[in-house]
Length: 141
Image 1 (cartoon, helix red, strand yellow):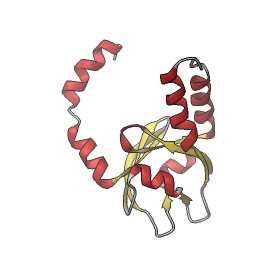
Image 2 (cartoon, helix red, strand yellow):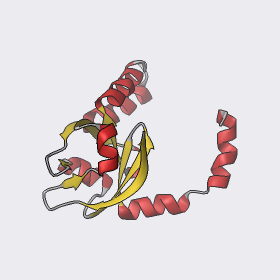
Image 3 (cartoon, one colour):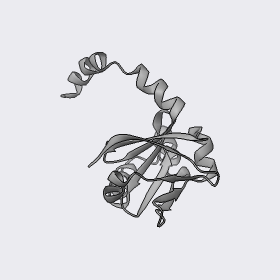
Image 4 (cartoon, one colour):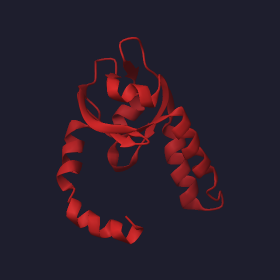
């Protein structure tokens, strides 16, 4: 299970260290793509296949379904962790997520989210667990 919050820095070449605690579950090779809320998503190969299967069930005739699939697939790239525990994030994905130097990596059970520190702080500050809990009750949680 991918859990926890980790702070790291992007190097000049666009590489980021994968926290050791997440490395085992994400695997040495994984997929990274545009995420929601202005972050990047990283999936293990197994979790990406599950996500791919869900996207494949969306009707091609539906404009929103096509756009949703396009959003994730067009930005997706294979990543591999090097011997120093680093992986490269492409320039287009760094630009999308506003990644410059200070990065927050968050384990989200089946995926990892990669945030610029500034965006993460904005997102984290805006979370009201009590308000969200009331809404989650409608989803059966």
